[in-house]
Length: 242
Image (cartoon, rainbow, N blue to C red):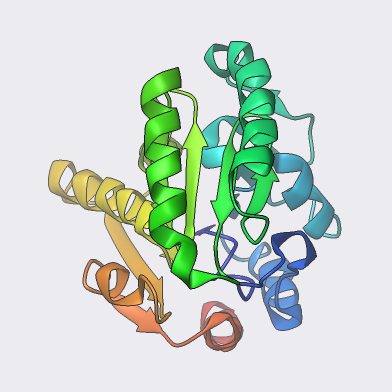
């Protein structure tokens, strides 16, 4: 079982630094670890952030920054070598964003990416998107759109689809739970594996939201109403699996 974090296991917040997973989710994940082969979080967050939230579940594998970082079984954080030279550029970009963009834009520096949030000021969407596009062209970066956020990241071949495609290599079945457009690539990885291997079974689950929920739901097999509904779904699944 693979899970996105924000909007899937945890509610989205105006301040991304304060986000915590739903309490029942943590209980369910701990119980699921006894009955499924593998559980992993695949997120745009850094691994250190995820490790802090899942400190009580060291058996959960962590993929951060769209796969640019990972930690397995509570081990050390491993960074994609090709991304390391971009750290100075990302730091400079975050500084420029704080200087040049309106103060209402929340600039989230993640070492290997910079996320620009306009959740508290929706009217700034076009301003932020234009600035991000110009900076991406200037520096040769990639742009990842999200729920009232745009993220700039290194031009390294890493996304949720690639993570899932590699992670399910020996699996007979895999589930992916997500809420945002970047999760559609993970859904596509499951679809591609099904097309190539008739013995593989993949399940794509969307967590509804008023921003990107319809686009994600249309690509999924099943839709849940919220992170809280996901927690209830997993709790019910535990009883079935046992």
